[in-house]
Image 1: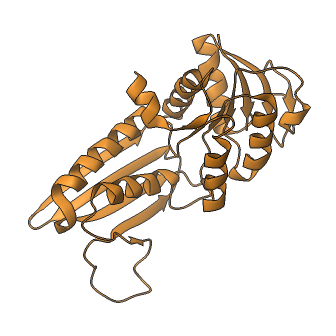
Image 2 (image 1 turned 30 degrees about the horizontal axis):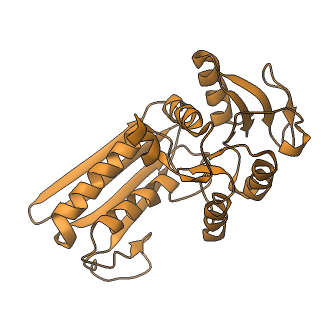
Length: 252
């Protein structure tokens, strides 16, 4: 049984992780949320520093602005930290990597195992097809999502860029402001927001007279909660370092 300190416990993903943990026989020992209204069988605080118990791992589904406080708490208590939020700045990403020198830190912009398989397929496609194929990424999410494009879309773009070194691969987020032809090697990223779409990502490799489409669709938040729980089990007891979902997948 894993003892989890859950940050962002009253959000949608916090509720999904609480349910997944209960089903797996794990225990949320406490929650952290700006809205401390109790939503389950565990106490809820507005700051991790208010929690006086001990957890095996911290799982963060709150907001990227909470990162510094979570890292400080993780270092002070020597507790592994699993960061599942998105929208981090470059400075915050660097802060996570730096914290990995002192405490185990896990970060992924998407906790789905399926998405991470999609990344592997995109790497293979990019390395095989090269810059002769134009790449467009279309991501779709519910109308409550704050950041655009999604962290997952950026993660997919990053892995394609790393796999194909034949072009600079600048990211293009909108085309209406510039009237010009598409440049060779750029990666277009488009965002759709509407209804209750949990998460859909399509990656199009468009060549001469043929198009290859790689897709992933999440039907519920449970897939992300299950992946986060798997990452939490993986991180419990780990040595200091900076880990990601590739490490989890490779350990299966």
